[in-house]
Amino acid sequence: MSTAGLLAVEAALVLALVTALWALSVVVRDTSIVDIFWGSGFVVVAWVGFALADGSPDRRLLLAVLVTVWGLRLSIYLARRNLGKGEDQRYAAMRRRHGDRWPLRSLVVVFWLQGALIWVVSLPVQVAMTDPTPAGLGALDWAGAAVWAVGLSFEALGDWQLARFKADPANRGKVMDRGLWRYTRHPNYFGDFCVWWGIWLVALATGSAWWTALGPAVMSILLIRVSGAALLERSLSRRREGYADYVARTSGFFPWPPRRG
Image 1 (cartoon, rainbow, N blue to C red):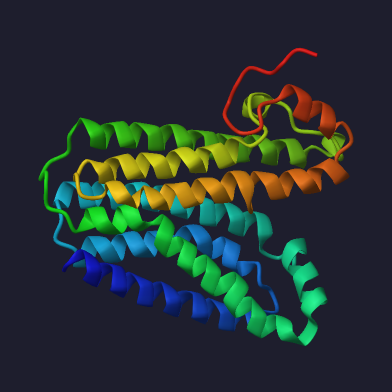
Image 2 (tube, rainbow, N blue to C red):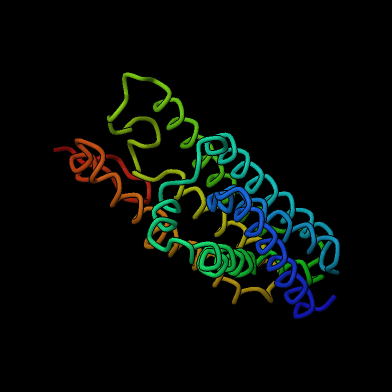
């Protein structure tokens, strides 16, 4: 299958999936189920590409495995954290603000938007799946896998450390500044950043996918400036006593030794 053909098939598939998910969200009155789907959506894209494309079998398998491990870990983590706890406060606030218009509005501004982002961010995976050269894996593939591994470690360990911190009643209302959180205020988002730039390096090994840097670039903007760190910081600054001091001594995104006050 050609690159253009695969991109078209994946776009149609993602659109169908997020639309079906939207219909379910209307029934259960919970828009936040889209967050659980986020990681799994990339997994679907990866394996459809693996099945339909004609690129290097080794690289197709490597990309599918990297995306699957990352995506399923994220979806399982969010499902365990969120299911049974009602709609996320962000979506609940939007529902109150838009009233009866929210179900239809959410289709466009949440579900179709996230579907479009899944398609754009996964461009390195989709394009690399269609390129048969080079046939085997080389240094750039393994460098990308190494960057991916660093990212997954930061993300998984950061989430685990935060979950343990929140599970202790003595930490209620306190700022998490231990473990990886001592070196970056957002180890999980930094992990996502590394995961997708690592995947892009694997795609870059084909020589034809350099332009798909658009995918991890969009993910980086989301993580740093839009729905990731920036959005969370505004919320935490209001809700956590001592957060301003934490901000003053701790790197905002890239890990770095804390500043001494």
